[in-house]
Image (cartoon, rainbow, N blue to C red; front, side, top):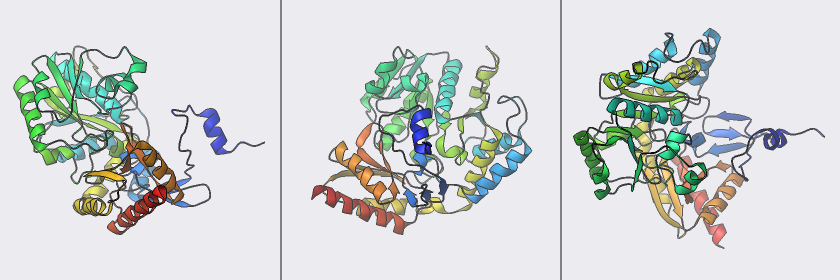
Length: 397
């Protein structure tokens, strides 16, 4: 008997859970993903914060085609002059408040975190990393050691030492940042914890103590950058500038790409003692950089970010139901918290039957994730909120 692609999926691909969603995508375009029968589903999570301008934008697809026809991989990162890398790095730096920034491209956000941690330790000569409980920075060993939860970490111990995990948004805990600390790694908004938004005074206090102690502040904006919260970068809303910025997910416009960005004075630490202090074979792949640049240009050329606060307001106003405990929105990064995780799981199943693809949060399984492409209109968002209310009513009958 011939195997279907779903059969092959379970047979040949390593599984990371015993209950994968198993949706078979044969096409993705704009706000929609299509199954093998040609049925369209609204992507309410943007491939987990990747498709900020929608799937397969024509300008991004064209940029991929054009670059692939010129050349793909030619040399490890940082050795040859590759135009897509240079042009994209210049465009990214033009959006940042400092003029001396440099970009180290990686393959993913978690690799960018690893680069940032190494860079901070090398530059400061210190070893301690401060991060925060229920933060998520990726699954590689350095990223796993910082933040996360005991459940995710315990099976992989021993982890990298000298990690001090503090409670998030706790002003008093900031006193544990000292002159022994190399860096503080923080999500401006904790995504996988269910969109936890810190107090602005807390962020300012964190920035001040880092400056006072000579500690590098690393902002992990893998989920919050590129308009997700209403500005190109979330840190712009806190009136602080991190020493190191980490990017991923939407950075590549749908292609795999990450970046660690810091002033040249810091980044030069990778140049000596040892030389080639950080390496990546495929980091900043020219096709990925061409795609990322095209996606960023689309975002810059449109007014899509201007409408995000109003779209978030619409969702907050319509997502009212006895089963909804809270709605936390940072632009179009939204957590809809239910009374328990079972309701959230059932909602995900019901919404898929209503042709809406969504998910929960890694450290907040009771919260439904809403993070649609930024191009989704208010009318569609309002309709989705009404569908959520209908399905909650059906569950409680």
